[in-house]
Amino acid sequence: MDAISVIRTKRDRGRLSDQQIDWVIDAYTRGVVADEQMSALAMAILLNGMDRAEIARWTAAMIASGERMDFSSLPRPTADKHSTGGVGDKITLPLAPLVAACGAAVPQLSGRGLGHTGGTLDKLESIPGWRAQLTNDEMMRVLREVGAVVCAAGDGLAPADKKLYALRDVTGTVEAIPLIASSIMSKKIAEGTGSLVLDVKVGSGAFMKNIDDARELARTMVGLGTDHGVKTVALLTGMSTPLGLTAGNALEVRESVEVLAGGGPADVVELTLALAREMLAAAGLTDADPAKALADGSAMDVWRRMIAAQGGDPDAPLPVAREQHVVTAPASGVLTELDAYAVGVAAWRLGAGRARKEDPVQAGAGVELHAKPGDVVTAGAPLLTLHTDTPERFAYALQALESGITIAPQDAASVYGPSPIVL
Ligand code: URA
Image: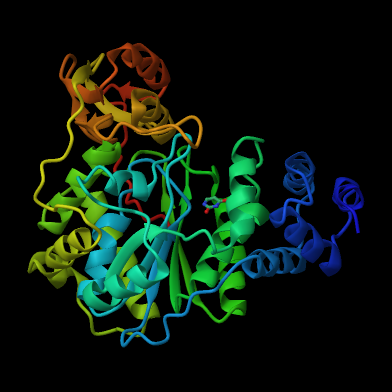
């Protein structure tokens, strides 16, 4: 077998055989297939697609590239959630402790932000002392003692995906349904969760820009999970405007703590509860009441223990960026558009995200929203506050926002206020 014949098969719109798939994933993981060969193959897959059987085999090969975890010794059923990525998507932060407070064990292996989308680990690292990197034994201990753990996947879990995802990110090959589905599901299946709820984002700030692609991605992932014995369900949720009122690491932690304290923006609370209900149902905990666990402080209690178990101080003040710049409404009327992609790029340029995977992020950087689509705004009133430690970035962030804000005359605008849950 050789890489060139595998690339040619997909380049010429052929089907990859099981042997070709097993060989290329294994050889790439071992460094026998070079990055430039794998990037050519990834581009051929992006352009020419894969059928269901090819995706299933590709996913199985990625799982087989590393170890598998096993939570069967835990006394509680396991439930996990994965979002395909968005702007202001801090839902994992309140959701993991909430679902644990309702009786499930939540082993939440999470990632870092890249590009315009944020990453759960970067957000939690803004809490002084908190550690993302745990050994498998430490992860089990936190799960046993607290019920929820949010940490980075160990090096042994789906190593083929680690290499391939980093490569796709710099070769314009992220947005391929077979590659996204196999990337997410190989990690989740190898992780060993009993049930999984997928939050498939759709809209300008998501990888899937339209509902048909999002539905196809959701169906593909649900099929992969089910075939591997993981009870898998998916929600398609909107990502055309940021979730909540913040995009940025410490800003999003602050908002998540507000939700755990019984407040926070309505869309974040609504989506957190919807995903919690799905996770609890998938784990067989149908009597649990997540709204009560949020209201009575038990979810907050798990959050505090979860942060402390990973070295964090839940009472420490969160970092604040050194400089702020207020963007005011250019006209009076109804805010009809505050584009998720524009806000995500602005937060990224302010320092909340990274351009290369080794770049540091600024804990305090990001965008705070003072209005959401559907709100009436007055000319000159604050619309956004931009936060950064490096004020020379303001102009660059403002450029990203230029075409992302639309205000319509109040009488011309129809009532606008979509639920984050679109299906
Ligand atoms: N998240 C992943 O883990 N992989 C992808 O390919 C896209 C989003």
